Image 1 (cartoon, rainbow, N blue to C red):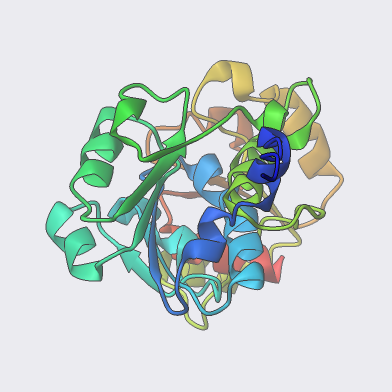
Image 2 (cartoon, rainbow, N blue to C red):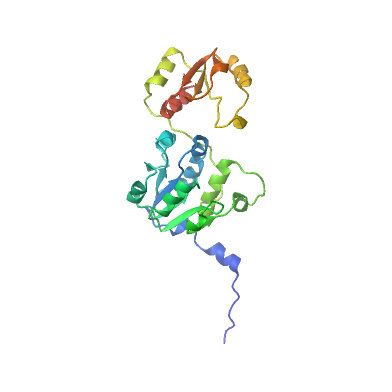
Length: 254
C-alpha cells in the first residue's frame, strides 16, 4: 500500500490559480472608487496594470459624477458608471472590487450581483467580501509606509497581476474645452498651471512658497475650487471652479 504523501500547504497555495486566472475571457469587473480627487487619480496605475495583464476583461469604474472626468478617455476603462445599484447590476460584473471602503461602497459591492466580491480586509464590514485583500505591506513583502498608488496597485498584484514596476498615474485630456478654460487660454498661454489647495491644511504647501515659484514662471495660472481662498494669489491669473475636463486640458497644454 502506497504511503500518502504529505501536503505542503504553502506549495499548494502557490499553485492555486489566482482570482484573475479564474475569470473567463471577456468577464466584467466593477471597480468601486466613489470619490476623492487624489485617490481617483492614483487608481489609474492599478487599472493600467490590470488591463495590461488581462486586456480581454471589461472594466467599469463606479465613481460620483463630479469626479467622472478623471477617468474619461482612459483606454484602460471600458465604462464609467454612476454609483447606483441598478447601473452596476446592469453591467453584470463577475467581480466587484471595492477600493473605497465606506458604507455606501460596501452596499454597492454587496448588491452588485457579482459572484466574486473583493476588498481590503481592514475595511469595515469586510465580512461582505468573498475574498479579502491583505495589507499592502504583506503583498509587497516590505514592512514600511506605502504610497497610495502602491497600496491600490498591491490589490492588483494580489488578484494575480505579476509583480512589476508601478506605472505613473495618467489623465487623458479631451479634444475640446469648456468656456472657463477657453477664456483662460485666450487671455494668455499658461506656461505653468499651479493648484495650491488640498482637502485639508495639513496637506497644503504654504501659499507664500507657491507665490515664489509663480514669480519665476512667466504666465503662471492658479486653479482653485469655488470655496478656496485665492487672496494670496491676487497678483496672478486665477481660474476658479473650472470643470475637471477643462483643468485636464489646461494642464496638458502648459
